[in-house]
Amino acid sequence: MKIRIIFLVLLSALCFNNLSAQKNNKKITITGSVIDATNLPIVNAIILIDDVKTNSVTDAQGTYKVKVKPTAAKISIFTFGHGTFDDSIKGRTQIDFKFGGTAIQNQTDQPVPDGQKGVSTGYGTIKKRNVINETGSIDGTNKKYASYQNMADMITHEIAGVRVSGGEVNIQNSKNLWGPVMALIVVDGVYMDALPDIPPVNVKSIEVLKGTAAAIYGSRGSGGAIIIKTKLQAE
Image 1: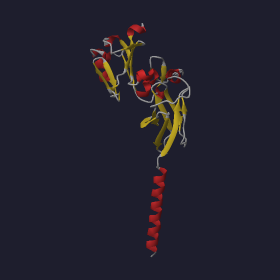
Image 2: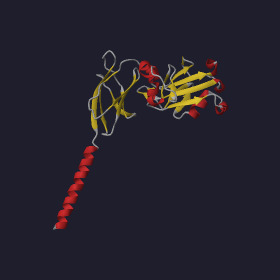
Image 3: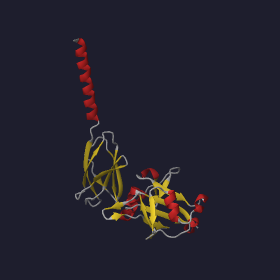
Image 4: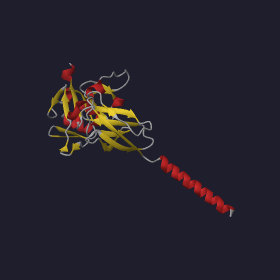
């Protein structure tokens, strides 16, 4: 009889612990709104949790809803026209965002301390840690790139997830409802319709900006961006 009672007590304790664990791991729903500097709703803004893209976007009223783990620490809003906005969750279930300026103001008007690696965007330099998605770069001054016949081969072989076809560049299979979205190409600060036929030996550097890293260019950078600096400009 005593053994049976002890068994029932242990079983009850085990069930209680399992229920407590399930309750603690239950996802939390966060809601909120996203508006611009003029208080207008921002539509189709992407919600990220701890720098990971979710399937949640803002609706026509600029509102969103997303489920997160209790351990989630940061929520980010990514927009093509206004850049990104980060905030700490800290147990809140209602988090509203108001963008106060353009993507250029939000992301480039900040100094990069000595010793911190920066990413060139064509407008300026932003901190590497502030770029949600990875960037790729090629140092054209490195002699190992001299063996490439053209920039297309150099980019596709050295930067993962990049495809070049007929001068058009697609990064990480970027696409929308209408099909593939091609990357913006900027050469020495000038927008180009296609990847130019510049010999690799004349290239000083190439920066490949993916996802939120290209948000500084607004809707033009929705498919990412290829930022090319030639040695001619450097001189």
